[in-house]
Image (cartoon, rainbow, N blue to C red):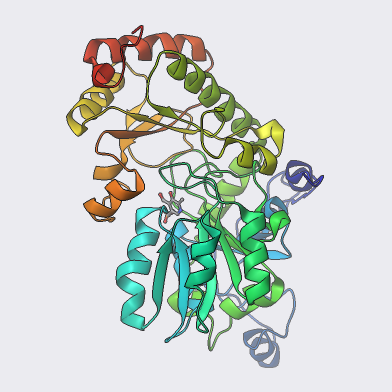
Length: 408
Ligand code: PLP
């Protein structure tokens, strides 16, 4: 792995408030005054560096946050948006125009899947969904109109890991852009170092980490970000998913502790995954040797941040999964809620929530079974205690009897 320490890069960024505050001041304005009409015109045209015009175009706090996230992903620059979907759709609509084609992993977040499958075709952009590590089928899917390969570095919810180096190689040979959603693995994986052109995050998840806001970012070259912000042709400028300055201020403050949180999320998830596996449960976690992409992910991560905070358990049926989740919530082990990256463990049944946009036959084919519970493991101080309490819940519900003659 190439030596690159995003946490140091972010730490070295200093921003002060206008009165010497240790946090930058929030610019509480949607519009900005000018002393001369000429400067206003130049700013509108993008030719007056350092001047602000209107907060959908840019605002000081959004630029601070974007700069810090560009450091995180080692890209020239970045642009923040009001949601992860705002980032994803802006990028895709900038890269693909009517008549174009895109290749996407078949295991991606349900909202992204729905956009590509249902919404994009109405703009005459078609998607071929592929097994993201079947390089032969990817190469075969490339047509003269293909513009990009889209994937998640660690997929939602199946935790499949994309071989970004190989995908980048295919993209380079075929003049395609590699677009990677890195929401599940901030700091652990640096897609740009493995050849990604554009890196996206839903900031709603680990990066903000406090489940109090939605937000997104895309990171890339100055040229690409400028294109998306062009007042005449920029997808983000014209679709308008602008982040509010108050929100970017709070996300920037939370970003300061991301390196500590990611280590703890990964440590706790690894602990539980190993215990569950020993107990004979159907657990999937890329940190386990039994995970089909374990070696691949090991070769891709910055080790100190581990394999991430997500794991899945197959409870066999939706009813069993629901019963277990409700009991764990009653026992205060976490919340029955979608999303991820919170201090508290969150669990949900993917097939009937965040992946419900994917038709049932396709869900079954790719392995999202009815009883699959996705856990976003929290920052629990005493994970051994959490494990013991979870084990009691599992025993009480008898969830896994159909899978195992386990010791539970
Ligand atoms: N990407 C991934 C991997 C996600 O899990 C999600 C949401 O769950 C999104 C993107 C969309 O982000 P947002 O909800 O912030 O729009």
